[in-house]
Amino acid sequence: MEQTKQRCGWCVGDPLYEAYHDEEWGVPVYDDLKLFEFLILETFQAGLSWITILRKRENFRVAFDQFDYTKIAKYDTSKFDALIADKGIIRNKLKIKAAISNAQAFIEIQKEFGSFNSYIWAFVDGKPIKNAIKNYKNGPPNTPLSDQISKALKSRGFKFVGSTVVYAHMQATGMVNDHEISCFRYNEV
Image 1 (cartoon, rainbow, N blue to C red):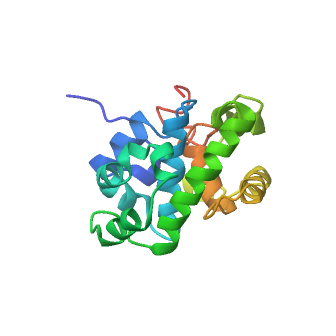
Image 2: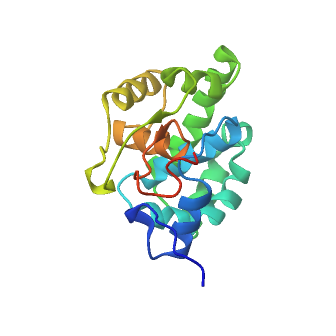
Image 3: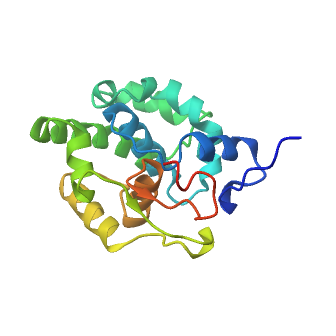
């Protein structure tokens, strides 16, 4: 009989959530395409639950050209209209517009810093911050660092990147390890 793994409390009970937790959440991401994917998903998640986004992730992937920011940056009115009509994604006009403008801002950062990875990871000196959270319910929704990154991204034209969204992005991409200390992934990532 397989022994049950101790996981962070927020994901327990939903196979999709557990798989995301076990395989992706908190794993350091240095690939620009993957960083952009998480940025788009996090911005669409604002005000919604993450499981809602995970359930629509493949639809987002198809609708947004595999999260290819070079294509998204060039979306025109007809593509915008198609996205608004796509029932498989979150059809919020402001968030869709933000995805397009964020792709443009993302490319500008790449031009300036060589990669988005170089830019974003510099905020943590290239190394994940390892927290010691006993219960996810006591974890912070944001931090002074996420406030700083949010402000920096907004100054570069990014939208829907408030401090809470940025902190969620930091958690998802492994800039911060917020796995509960009792979680089997805490020492693995």
